[in-house]
Image: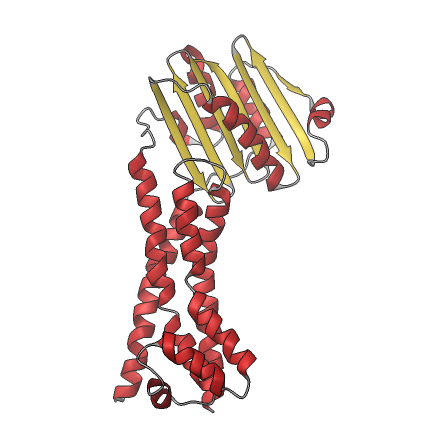
Length: 304
């Protein structure tokens, strides 16, 4: 039979595990699951050749345009109004930079009558713009990037090329244009992170008062709220620096979630912070787990 004390301890742990599992699963699905595999030169050349388009390896010339960026391969295919550029680097940062440059070129061509496709995962992003006269694609996946465009009447060629390379969603006609509602949902997801991260304080607070050499009952007698109690614990502690460190972690554990909310709001108006936002989306569940494990371990050692 479990004692009441053990039941009380198990309850927050169970809540934490359920919420964290749901949140981590959502993050994995949003940022990692169903991400296409990065392309290689042979795949791209074969896909373009299959469409009757001749390819050219212009790596040597392209390296002058991308100095010190680690360009390994550059394939270009051009036929009438269609142009397809493929870049392979030795790092993700350079591929992302090429995507950003291509995206900025494309985005300036937006018209009132347009269809947009926008998908992103960890180290993967694709943006397609289809207006009445032209069709554009910008994409990066790990260390590779693609920039392609043509007249709208020939867009099926680019769709077939990318579809054969493992990007089936691109050939679909039922695209959903990104709306402000999508941005609101993203902000709300990160707002939800704040109370989720707040739960980790359940394991941090006991370490704070135990590091001051004070029992839980004694800590409760020091004030009506933790805001009042914690400064007094630091004063009572024989090792105030240590107690102050634990108190800072306790007070600011939700800070990454607040930053993520701000970045999510900014991302509603600009694309430049989305890679940073992705990093926060993956870091938040990791911070939660690491903090919980570390402070549970410290608590057990202090209780001996």
